[in-house]
Length: 287
Image (cartoon, rainbow, N blue to C red; front, side, top):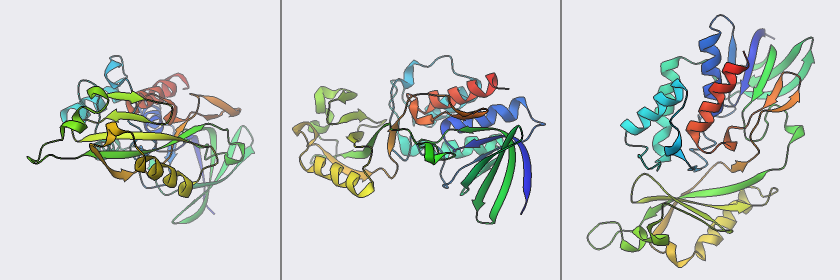
């Protein structure tokens, strides 16, 4: 079995994780760190969860990498000046961002176990090549559900979201009923659901709260039940697709698990840019 020694292991190819590993590589180019992700997707805690987020337009003092990403999202017409985002369009731009920076990311890699080892940790991983081990000084887990330490799960709120598509009128234009939903507001929040406009007139997002113990079968049943009995304001919309990631609502970190082992959930932040910025900031201060 191969054993590799590294400085920092980042868990989760989240916006926070990507910002963090980028900053570590920038400030410590001669000290190896790596980011691992159990899935094949990046930034899924927002984009695949259809978590639109808030306050995109109120972030003028972002760190450089987050500013570059925001500029590219704006240039590609994925983010408006008013802070309305087209979440599916963010994914390929994020992949390009990672590629341009040549970040050390291993996808489809699972944490099997973590054990104390001297002044650091021995981490056993599993991927398509089999079992491998890392000896690391520090672990920073940016996943939504504490993948590096699932036995210490903390209860947090979670939601399931969906992407809506506006119905068209006889002229092929977005129906007035859809345009004027909730008085044309960009955002509407109620106890039973939230509604947020996307980048385009034909695009919106809804989410509903779930119980902590709800699995995917129950979550999908609840959102389809909600849609079958939706408010009249949503009659101008159709349910396009349901998220394949839960929208978790943990408290912002970092939360210390053990010495030099932290949980910093990306999904705790208001939007992807803020999540990336916090990862950058924490990476800079943790050197």
